[in-house]
Length: 179
Image: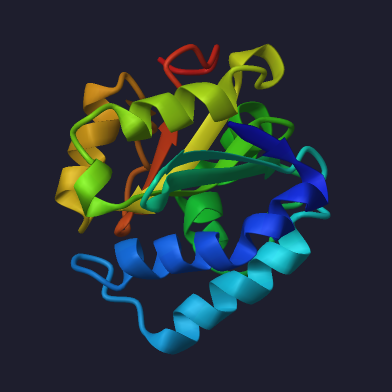
């Protein structure tokens, strides 16, 4: 199911619980403060242009979710954005990311993995991406996650020489800017 804007806040507690379940485990190992920051970010993110959430539910609750919005210029200063800007350079950021749908979070609980939940969430949340332009970033240290995005047809954007970090930028399978 997909939700646009502030209506997702009705599920905020369940999304935070799913986030905590997924991202407190390895390789992420996020602590209580980082989880609290996600809860705070969600309250602000719902106001971003094009904000949407896709989520999968079962009798157990929220099995997984994805959040996304339209990337605005300039890229923000926090989180992984400075690494993205350095690795891609100003022109590729403008051409590939600005105005595209940015997948901010994708979280699938361990018990729901391997059943196509992540694929379904990505497909649903990117279905109406502008000109099929969607992107996400993840940590290179999350090897299983990187492998999953490759398996799902997402394209890794190579870093400019000498700018490689642990951040990996992926373009959606139908993004017109992938090589």
